[in-house]
Image (cartoon, rainbow, N blue to C red; front, side, top):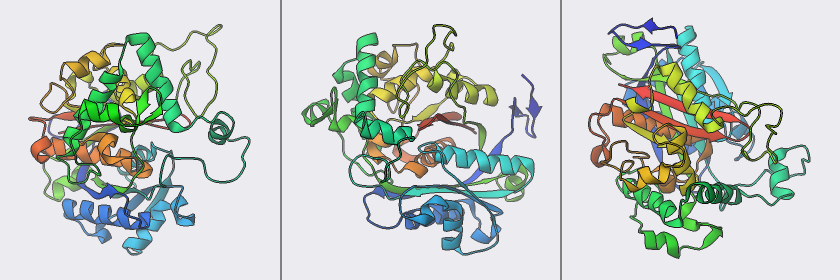
Length: 409
């Protein structure tokens, strides 16, 4: 593995570091306003945090939402117009739930290539009531349309299949899943941006309605309105701006699956056969983390915390294993040990996770990096991880979009 050395003695095996000068968010909830308002609020917070004006920004990268009409498909220029046209380079990206990580990757590439010194990354959403569903119209060649209309496989049904798999293979229980919610709800009470700021007991989870057996309502994240933004810059600009030791994005993984993919990965309705070609040693989600670790020159043991994509409580347990924090089938044991709660040896979802926020699709991967940034700066208040030095986010978008970011201090 090749290595490039930056000023200050830092070693980055591949790619390169960019500084996180600013992070900002709009609180999650159901506010009933256009998504642009949430994104602009988050952008202004991030700019203020960075000590920059909008006119100082060379480029804006918007993570798209597919709701809210035509502007939703061109979020970069939508946010630029709302902030005031100033001639910045513009990019819009869509990768479902991985849109925010793709936006961070695009911004980082522009900085490292010399195309821009300062980039504003923004994502926001005004989500529908209830669970997500495809846009209207008949599209028989669209696998997302097919899985809803032909199979009736809503997102909670998909989450439940994974929960049942863990129960069958590893002996996970409904009580294990409930304790993920309990842990994340406790962290969410300490986060002013979280939608749900109330502690939850295992009994509360057990008493909530069954949505897709074995998952109950409190096992599954809601859909939310919200926004998140980052200001990224070159390290040189950060030093000139007075940030001698900023938080840095060191790796962004946006990999796709490898053939054969032998685990169901909706919206695709079938798996690949491994009869003629052996399946990869590591599955898709594990490969997302592997690529981030390789690029960063770090490993699971170097992480101080993680922000993972807890669409359901059972899926969070799967991420523990995919990120290398626990051996296969040992995620629930790690949870039971207290290792992933605030104060544990490797806290996961210190923000409260999607359990406390809900999904605001284009914003959530950016929001994960905001939490990593605040933790690595040491400004996360009561949910602070002492001495945090490195953190990883993990996410996944429909249609084979990997999403993971490693930030360091």
